[in-house]
Image (spheres, protein in one colour):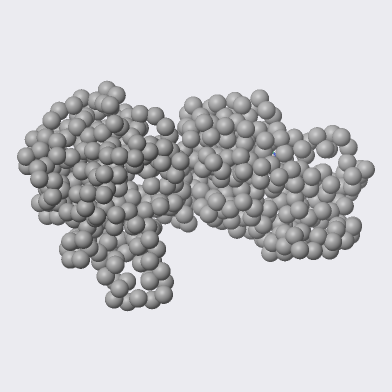
Length: 584
Ligand code: NAP
């Protein structure tokens, strides 16, 4: 397999011939992608194609892999010193006058840590993006620190990583890995990757896999034991580093990077809910973060630092919030903005949406746009989805928040009242999930949908039949969708706020009373909500936490949490409370 549109050349170094592929304009900054184990440069095909639109992209098969030749003898042919020689030879061939931006995954990252921390490469590396592959020196010090001062937590970390490294022990056994890879394991590996890592089927891995994996065992044998036993004391990075940590990596604990700031003075952290093979499973996010990082380093600007709560998780992500012109929606847009996301603020009130977008930019959003749409209008929502997908791409996070209040007994609630509240509160959510969720699922790179329901979803009340019904439907829709999308790494959360001090009371409809009484009730409920004074910012925080931890149902205020517990343990009590007529 060759990479589509790539120009290939061979670089001779230290007795091996390296197969080097180039894409994009050589006049642009060079981004060099180094693959891991058991892989060849084709693991990068999706990321390389995206980056080639902006950069000169260079990939090479590590010695003994893909179409590069293997050293003879194999033993001692894969030391980090030799791999550093290879990197310098490729860098000199493809970018003799300018330092390169290095990107490594798995063992590609392990060896790139060596490149970026040894003196002889200084001036040749402009930046380094590391994914799922620690520095062996940092790892050695990490182990040493935990052995020297073994608190229960630190022993747990050691044991956890020790268990995740089971395959490293196996790779140190003689001949067995070679036999397995050239036999049944090599044949089954593509299916294993699809099942356990959710790597899409296709032309990856390539047919060289068995010999790549057999040769690559020497990467471990030549380096791991020696380095972990005697880590270099001066393994400091001489270029800015971006660390992308997949949170569900079966082979590496995120705790491994706890002490990284001591080795890397300029560190940007990114996390994403994914497994080990992110160049295959999350190419959009990975390329977007590389592009942002490389562009800022090239522009002489400080590399982006993940700010705000969950900045490492949401920085650069595309987030759309409906009903973002006020209350919980606006606060949620701001919280994502603070975390460095790209925010699309949607409201039926154009001015309010524009204000949210403008403030989001000031607060720290990577970018922000305002959109006007009535979520209950299917056609308007279709147009909105078309515009957003065309101009900004597929959403990473969708927050269906727009909603209206409606209070009054069942027999005073007209069909028109029912229609209005279901149209906005339920159909608005259905349109959002359908139009944006479908594209998320189609992209196949994960995402998250948040639906703002209410404590009224599980707490019955004689005064809120229509509103509670709409919210109960949103809660159940969220649960069903969560089950349906779990296999595609798309989380779905229902947020159940409770009483929150927003403008909702000013616009809520009260049925069965004349206008003067309706206005009096609005004022009175606004006063009550004001007295309770639970800020929408706390709901926004709950939204970000829920996405970060992929929670299913989140009651927010203490009373919402209490009612949630009662609905499970003592539903009879809630039923009795539901009979009480609220005095407004
Ligand atoms: P809010 O301050 O009134 O904000 C809601 C925003 O959504 C407003 O800007 C509103 O615009 C907009 N909106 C309403 N209908 C829309 C539509 N059809 N299309 C597009 N935008 C629309 O209310 P909130 O308290 O933040 O409510 C947000 C969500 O939280 C709602 O789903 C609500 O049911 C839920 N919730 C609120 C509470 C609470 O105590 N506040 C409790 C539980 C659940 P207009 O101003 O023009 O109406």
